[in-house]
Image (tube, helix red, strand yellow):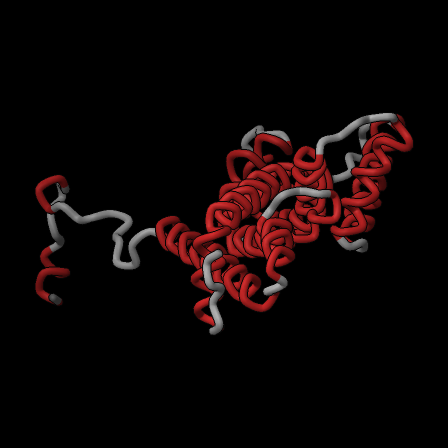
Length: 263
């Protein structure tokens, strides 16, 4: 029988050799849940944000105005419920409630994707609405003036600017999801925390194994934040650009003689 380590770092090295592959697979599941859930959540938030900003047309029929108000009230309820309850409770309700109420045998991974997505969508809906409202109203009025409807103005004028404004919030939600996927262990999703807890129970070395887990979580969140920061800078473009470069050969009038003397 091999001799067990006696020091802290000896145990860390030993546990890495024994359970490194298990922890790596758990980290991959965590990243998959966070990235896919954040992407779907952003799509949900985008749709909700656009609907929330649709202006009420007084010339529309009563049925159309009533339908729009009903849709907005339902979406408001969705946002308030999922922002006002913990994700761990949502996971329990969705996973066990699907079987109890609708006899749907939902897999833990599918339930995890579903919960992370709708939870992120509720937070991103408010971020999207704020990003849309942050764009000058004159731009939307100009788009409407040249014949665009609400959705065309959103797609071509407002959203490209709004998405850039809320990009830090998207990154923040991704980092939060990387950490918060740990609560999905309550429905047996084999993410990083679940794998760490299982490995720690073999030798009862909880401090050592969760020390490793802490470092893995930090590496994932730090890398994600730096990549998103790099993407933000790429979208900003160069700081020393010129809108139009003056070419005297292409100017048929040339430089005015008075302007030349002043220079």
